[in-house]
Amino acid sequence: MRSETGPDVLVVGAGVVGLACAAALARRGRSVLVLERNVAPGREISSRNSEVIHAGLYYPAGSLKATSCCAGRERLYARCAEHGIPHRRTGKLIVATREAEIAILDEIAQLARINGAGEVEILSAGEVAKREPRIRALAGLWSPESGIVDAHALVMSYHAEMEACGGTLVTRTSVVDLSCREGAWRVGTVSPDGDRFSIEAPIVVNAAGLESSRIAALAGLDVVALGYELHLCKADYFAVAPSLGVLCQALVYPVPVPGGLGIHVTLDLGGRYRLGPDVEYVDTPRYDIDPAKADDFAAAVQRFLPEIRSEHLSPDFAGLRPKLQGPGEPFRDFVVAEESAHGAPGLVNLLGIESPGLTSAGEIAERVANLVAQGAPAGG
Ligand SMILES: Cc1cc2nc3c(=O)[nH]c(=O)nc-3n(C[C@H](O)[C@H](O)[C@H](O)COP(=O)(O)OP(=O)(O)OC[C@H]3O[C@@H](n4cnc5c(N)ncnc54)[C@H](O)[C@@H]3O)c2cc1C
Image (cartoon, rainbow, N blue to C red):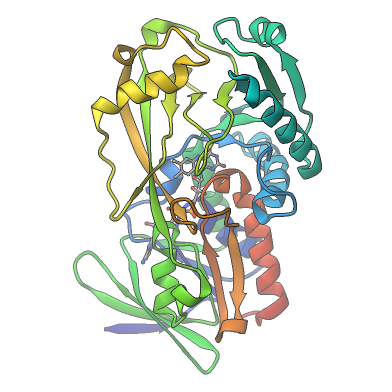
């Protein structure tokens, strides 16, 4: 095994969050090394999501999900403009299709105003029909600050910025061991060819997405006692046949369901529509989609888009949410924590970074850079 003295900060994982952290740290003059097990960055959660810029409507007031989403949204729109990242402020419509759901729209509007999710407006059935003629609803909530972004371009922009500021990404390198000795973390890695390598850094940022709980455990933390265990929650998407034409101009969502936002209609920057995602807890990572689910997807969306039939749908892709809460358990917030209090000084854990993590990445990164600045020595 080869061994080397390393950077100020070692980041585990080159998804949007790890690379945003690496860019923020490199911008502040830290030497940064990012280790990624795949052949290229952004191949896991960051490439299997809805690519929605969330306004920050739903999350409990004061939660990190709410604050990092609202601040992250502004940061993200500014970044997209500055770096030429494809995006569009499509707006988003949440629709009530049952009388009881109208009160839920009012609750969401109230929460959105508390959270700072930007302007929101309650629409009547007629106003919904005027805005989106193919959508049927009793009422709607309009959020003009919601939008869509090219997630791959966003990941690449952070990668480029990190490298321009002197940081390095090494791919095909899995972190398999972590131990702390005399104020430094020794990080053991293995390549797909079995080559082993270890490197030292005073600070490790755990941005390993679906594996972040495992990395925390490798660092010696009792993930069960700390509530850091992850539950994988699968999310399937179905593509809508282009023959249906322009279904809607905005993103159209039902009122939220436990565990997710409800099967909704999203569009990508190429103008393709898809339905999803659903919510299915799984024991092991898998990305297959049962085509028979098309019936359930069509039925869910027919409530507000009556012309959708299962024959219009084909399996598109699946993603996995890294959830801290198991099925039926209450809300859990993002964990962004420097772990001195748990006997792991210099380890910054990012756990449970599910939606709205894409929107929040820039803001989470600033938070991580501040944690590092407060507690960690600058490297020479
Ligand atoms: C279905 C779904 C829909 C979503 N929709 C939205 C949305 O519309 N808007 C929004 O804002 N957010 C959304 N999100 C959330 C968003 O996609 C995530 O929060 C974000 O992509 C997480 O990025 P990440 O960098 O933490 O994880 P990842 O992108 O998974 O990156 C983690 C990286 O760590 C690497 N890694 C893991 N273990 C190791 C190891 N041992 N050694 C080296 N490397 C390792 C992985 O290979 C991976 O590349 C959605 C998420 C899901 C699942």
